[in-house]
Amino acid sequence: MRRILYVFLAASLFGCKQDKQSEAEVTPSEPALEITTTSSDSNGNATNVYWGDTHLHTTLSMDAGLFGNTRGLDDAYKFARGEQVTSSTGIPAKLSRPLDFLVVADHSDGMGLFQSIQNGEEWVMKTPQGKRWNQMLEKGEGADAALELIKAFSQKEMDMNPNDPELQKSVWSMTVDAAEKYNEPGKFTAFIGYEWTSLIAGNNLHRVVIYRDDKDKTYNYTPSVTYDDQDPESLWKHLSAYEEQTGGKVLAIPHNGNLSNGIMFTETKINGEPFDESYVKERIKWEPLYEATQIKGDGEAHPFLSPNDEFADFENWDYGNLDLSALKTEDMLQYEYTRSALKLGLKIKNELGTNPYKFGLIGSTDSHTSLATADDNNFFGKAVNVEGGAERWKHPFVQADKGVIYTWQTLASGYAAVWARENTREALWDAMKRKETYATTGPRMTVRFFGGFDYSAADLDNLVDNGYAKGVPMGGDLNNASGKTPGFMIHAVMDPEGGSLDRVQVVKGWANADGTMGEQVYDVDWSGDRVIEENGKLPAVPNTVNLKDGSWDNTTGATELKTFWTDPDFDPSLEAFYYVRVLEIPTPRWTLYDVLKYNIEMSDEVPMTAQQRAYTSPIWYSPK
Image 1 (cartoon, one colour):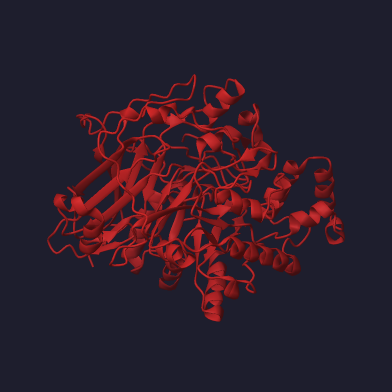
Image 2 (cartoon, helix red, strand yellow):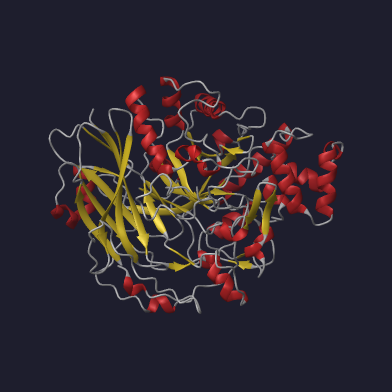
């Protein structure tokens, strides 16, 4: 099995601007899609796509603070709203375009712990670990202290209780107040949320929790913690109690299954018991989305699981679990990646009647710098200790007996795209719940995806109205074909600040009656005059990135791609799903920007370019 050393908490860039020479070279072959700014059509359908990060940490997270993050809630919101701030290392930082929404997701475990260690509070200094970490901070060794704390937490070797109720309440109050301060309905949405940080012997089961509600419901309901109970079922009980007691609404988003060593998408409960009807219903009730891409690796697919997919080998992290306490084995992989989990969900539905892995897709950063940027040319990355510098690419961010983790292996990813009626907590949360969402690895490309039994190519002329009227959008369900074959309408428009489009693909997965599962990737639209070859593959789009100056030629791709496609292999008797993957042409990776900024060389193993991409939420088909 191919192993890639991955970074546990990792890298970034600084505030360099993209050379806009490439934009001047764009020659659209077709008119670009005009994106409406109205919130919804006369039928209440979503006509606006909103961009955000559902997974950002500030200095209030114990690991972020120990790594040197001094930026708090105010700076996190100001940066996301498009204001210039100063990073923890003194670098001016600003987004070229503001985000529409943000979830500050500081860890529920250890709320206030970093500040207590930093201040040398008596209850901390009474423990050997607390005293040691305080001294390490004073010596400027906060990053080493952070790694020790993370490992102690994940292996349940803490000398102290990381969850002091008074500290947690104090930090939670600050979190809620800041979200209320910066929430501006119609302009910018500041969700109230946190990260539930389950680490079972270093195996990642993290979830981001997002409330639909305001301060009146959330202020006095402190988050669920994991140190004493790391089973996700305990989180679901907490969320259920919240809704029952407050009348509010809440959901959870798992992430980084690639670091779970095979326990994120299992076929049994965490305690080893088999799934039952109650479990599968609870899981999909509380977890309607999955964070498929972020700084710690892309999680859409893996070449071991999808050997016929030439694009499955994208920024995979498949070396071990979150703290490198255990290495990966091939049998774990099918329980870690988005596509394999979606297929497992169909299999489980055939057995128990409910699909526990019927999730939509988003991306987010998981940045611990307070800066929500997934842009390669403006990438501050995972942690403050590697925000910039000529040496950071080879920085041994994690060094353990089982391997070394290097900063260059992190990626500038990702963002959450949400089709909603308006930019409010309620409208965005409702869209997340119904899975009308998609993930990107950073670019803000616009993607529409509809499925139904009554479409024709003529419906593309009024895609949105016809899409909703005759079928369902991404995240929806098709049932009982009744002798018809499903058709799909797809429209993708390039990010005006990114690369043009290489191709649009439909990824299909299905479950056979005998319990086996299948998948197929179809190229359905692409740029240029390329044709499918005898081997069934579409020739690669040219890589025009100039490694000497970081420019590229957008004329090799398309400004937009729009198509109607029907499934040529449809079997109406089988459970199936379809999602769209959109690929850009190759563009510079953040490592190339570092090479150019610092006039340095990197080893041959470090990639300089990447094909950024988007993944839509699936549309599911059921024969029943």
